[in-house]
Structures are given as structure tokens and as C-alpha cells.
Image (cartoon, rainbow, N blue to C red; front, side, top):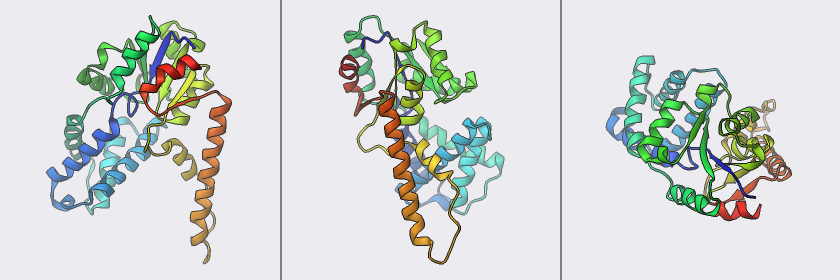
Length: 279
């Protein structure tokens, strides 16, 4: 393949979002003190990430607005520590977290070298972003990290009203660049949301499966949405096994769909130029 256009996801693809989240919540708990003092760090990061997935998904689904999902995350986290926050206090609490989150902003170490290598390997290639986020906030990340100098167009679901993996957002991005989907590649860290979504729209979908990363949260959300089995006196021990089996089946189905659509898997961005050349 000789791509004319390389489109990327931002968070946890080019931008080290998860690292900044962990940095931010850890330092915010220290600054808050009180009921949050001495909270288990690893458990706090895990809880905060799960609340982010839950409530940001509600925002993408139109259940909550952008500020509402932020308040819900703060309220859910505080409640787990025995603290009740009204909407005003929750908004202030989240703003405090954001200050620490911003302090941890950086790109993944392989982000800029990947863009350089692609430009060298495929002269004339253009770069863009598709993000399930708000344009203004994501734009801050680009400017802070210098990525804005390398990215030609940013397609944000918050402005377009369409979210990944809807094929329309990928097709819209291609139309903005005036490039046919067959000549475009999309790279993201989520298999279904990013790579499968792009491939279904006719682009080359690339799944960035960095070592040690968790399973696609979108798959977890699908499994969590399945109706629970009726509770019985002996059901407790089997429910976990059933849930694990359902998750494994969902993962296998997703992998099969990815294979059918020709999704390319890479362990890091450094592998992208060679993977595309061989595709």
C-alpha cells in the first residue's frame, strides 16, 4: 500500500492519555487530602478510568452532556470515598483534577518519529486526526505538545455530531482531505472503535495494540450490557465463568471481524511504515 493520507486517533495513540490520567488523579488526591488521603493509588486509578469509560460513553451516546459527564465522574469517585458532591462541588473537583491532568500531557515517544518515518517512506502523505472528543479541548493537547504543526485537519465528534465507529466520520475525514478511502489509513488503539470502524468504511484500519494495554473498553461495554442471569443460590460461582466465557466469545468474534476486514495489527507506531508498505 502507498497511502496518501494517514489519519490517527489522539488519546492513547499519539497522545499519552492514560499516563496523564494516572498522573492527574494521583496528584489530585494528594492535593485534596481529607477523605482521599491515603487512598490506594492503584485502586484509585482503576476506579477513575472505569468511571471515565462509563460516563464518557454516556456522553457519546447523548445521555449526558460534556460537562455533565465530568460532574458524574467526580461524583462517582467521591461517593466511593464516602464524599457527597453536589453539581457545583463536582465541577470544581473536576477542575482541580484537570489542572494536574494537564501537567502530565505529553506525546508517546514513538509519535513524532512515526510521522517523520511516514513522510520519508511515502512522500506527500498528509496527516489528520479523528477523535471522539471536543475540538477545543483536543486542540489544547495538540498545541501544548506541538502536534498542531504536523496535523492538517482535526475531525472531532463533538463538532460533527457523529462518533467512531460510525463509518460516516471516517468518510467525512476523507472528503475533507479529498482523498479516496482506499488511499487512506486510520490508526487507533481501540480495535472495534478505531480499526474495525475505519476498515468498515473502506479505509485500511490499523489497530495499535501496545504491549500491556487492556482489552478494548468498547468490548467490555458490550459484555457489560448483556442481561444478567437470574440469581439462584448456586449461581454466584457460575456467573463469573459465564461472564468470562461471554467476554472471550465477544473478543473472538471481534478478532474474526477484524481479520475479515483486513485490519492490520502493530505493537507500536514504529512498526507502521513497514506494515503499510507490506499491506
